[in-house]
Length: 267
Image (cartoon, rainbow, N blue to C red):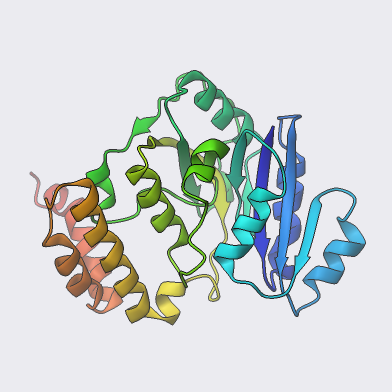
């Protein structure tokens, strides 16, 4: 059994495509748990009227993202927990392909996939040669390499670390991966674009509260260095914090140069 968890607050413009995409999954034993986290835009009423008999609907007062995620995965006894953000939609082969890899690699506790920003790039055909990439701890030092929306997690591993950290204001997924690594979990990525990401102004915590976001990343990166890498890379959290203070256009130019600079120079 797979429990797909979607938390939503004021997500009415995006939610229907999310729900339809989960209902269309090729895995029969799955349940979609939708936690409405205190919506005030009519989302709760729309869900109740149109989807209450088709999803496990949980209505709550505003409790925050971390608490809402924990309410969701704890509501259903399932071997696997999958996350799909309310403003995203999934390929019809998402769950069956992710589950196939997890069954073939029982050592993997967390399996992520790619999110794409164009519908035509969503991969909707089964793959016979998808090989997961096991992520070492140092991959989590400079960035969060796992896309939260679309991830598949073994419930046993999630329960071992008591789920998401409800004391946080952001970076719930990044903090969870670090906690799981500290518990000995194995995290991997699958290079398959199973999630369609819809980008909009309300989506990015980073753009709304940038300094708080950077401080959160800084703390998690220091934790990776100290608890997982024996102190290696201890300067990287400071360097990435300073880099994050640069204007967005300059950061985009740096990323472009790093990716394409050698090619542009003919090297």
